[in-house]
Image (cartoon, rainbow, N blue to C red):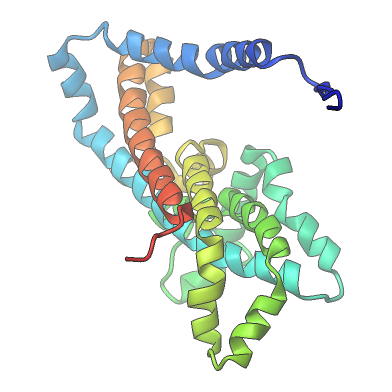
Amino acid sequence: MGLVLKQRSVLPGFGLTLGFAVLYLSLIVLVPLAALVIKSTSLTWQRFWEIVSDPRVTASYRLSFGASLAAALINTVFGFVVAWVLVRYRFPGKKLVDALVDLPFALPTAVAGIALTSIYAANGWIGRYLEAWGVRVAFTPLGVMLAMTFIGLPFVVRTLQPILEDLDPEIEQAAASLGATRRQTIARVILPELWPAVLTGFALAFARALGEYGSVVFISGNMPMRTEIAPLLIIIKLEQYDSAGAAAIAVVMLAASFSLLLLINLLQRWKSTPQTAV
């Protein structure tokens, strides 16, 4: 019987590694979130409800969540198209297009907001032509959605790219040789493999858009009841030294975001679990 040598791991043992991971996550994520919730508990329930149910606050919730959801859906569709083109086709300037996808990561959000506002304003390069058709982008909810779409696209593309690269094109050729149409191949061969990555990209784009401030605050115009986002009201509360009120608004956003992300993760796990045939 030969001796079985235990392979040494590059990282320390499981217990020490887990301890460092939990400590890091606690200091960076759990402790700040717990402090946020604890700060909101300094308010009475009646005062808490008055703050979060204020018409101005609820209007900001509708815009923040609605625009974030719309932007994430748009990015899911067009991000899939961009990722597909970058993976499956060769064309001049491909590396440049691939680098441009990461531009929202590197570009300061305030710069992105100013650029979008100057381009889509009524006298901007694109806005002047849209204005002639009666379409206003800057200082409207449409502009808010545009800014959120801009900053969320890379999350979908970079999530789908490695999965598409691992997807063997011969599977599609086999489906076509068996008589499947292009639509059937996409629906029954490609999408089932991509669903977990699609849901992950959607969740990342949604979460990024929901917390965006810099690029949105310029193009939105910050008009109460119309184009104010929830992060802006949190900043306003802090400037008024009402940290408990700011925490109350943030807690509602945190609870809604966590619930939606939890639902997406459950759907992702369900999609990735092999279904047993009856």
